Length: 155
Image (tube, rainbow, N blue to C red; front, side):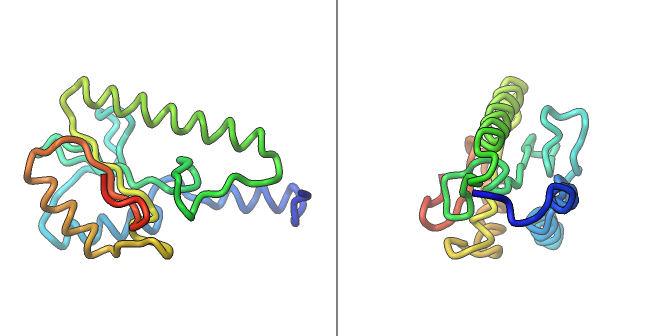
């Protein structure tokens, strides 16, 4: 399939996509702060520079976009144009995510991954449900966790 825009326009569009301070990340940060949780943003002294770090609980939180991290949900679809490039890129992202989780576990950090589909799209469980789940999980000391959309359930 041929791209619908020229390469300069596509480059400008892709450059506009944020890697930090995304809408899902900002919504989660705002809600957790309103619930009294204090955190560090993208700390360089924590492996992987998580979106949120809770040193008090030794928890790293990643708010993952379903497309960029190749999540198996309705928000991810491999592009038809340059499929080899995108497949390799997403595979590298997923491998990096796994490497970071291993590094965090070695240093006794718990990891929480919140997927975009949990708060956006037709499979969303809603921001308030995500925040309730995160708030209770943070304080329990339970093992690593993922929060996903309805079709996948919470892991």
